[in-house]
Length: 251
Image 1 (cartoon, one colour):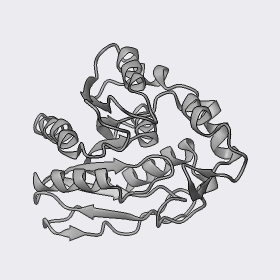
Image 2 (tube, one colour):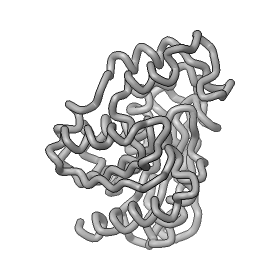
Image 3 (cartoon, helix red, strand yellow):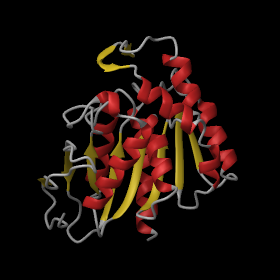
C-alpha cells in the first residue's frame, strides 16, 4: 500500500489475509507526509462499523491522524466463515493488515476480543508501536464459557444468528486461556480504558492486565459506561484521542 498524499477518504487497496480472504476495510488519510496510522480492531460477533468505532475514527481523523478500520474474516462484509473466526486466526488477519501498512507507524486500538487480539499481536510484532485496549478481554476462556458455554453448537451468540457458537472458537479460547502472561511482556506504550458498568468483560480484566504488566500501562475508567460505551462516547474520546496524540508526538 502506497502512503496517500492527500487528506481525503481513500481506499487502501485490496487487503487479503493469509487464506486469500478479502478483508473489508476503510482507510482515511491523515496529514500529508505523516506516517502514523491507527488501526481499529473490533470484538467478537462484531464488525468494523460500530458506533464507538465510527466516533473514534472521526475524532482521530479530525486531528489529522490516519485511520484504518476493518472487519475480521467471517465478520461483516469480509470474506470467510464466522465459524473459522477464532482469536488465533484474527491475530493472523491483523498481521495481514500490518503487511498492507508497510512503512507506517501503527497504533492498534482493540475493543473487547479485539483487545485480546491486539495484545497477542503486539506481543510478537514490533510493527505495533502503541497499544490501546478498550474494554479489553484478558481472561479469554473464562469470557467464552461464562457467556456462551451454555449454548449448543450452532446456537446464536448474543442473539446474532450470523454468529453461531462453534467448536473452533471454544477450543481456541480454551487453548489461549488467560493473557496475563502475555501482558507481562508488553513494553510499548499501552492504555487500558474500561467502563465500570461493563456487563460483558468485567473491569477486573483490565486491572489484572495492568497488574501483570507491572503497572506500566495506564488504566482509565469511565464511570457507568457499559461494554459498548453507550452514551459515553465523549468520555471515551477524551480518554483515547489526546493520549494517542501524545504518543504520536513523542516519536
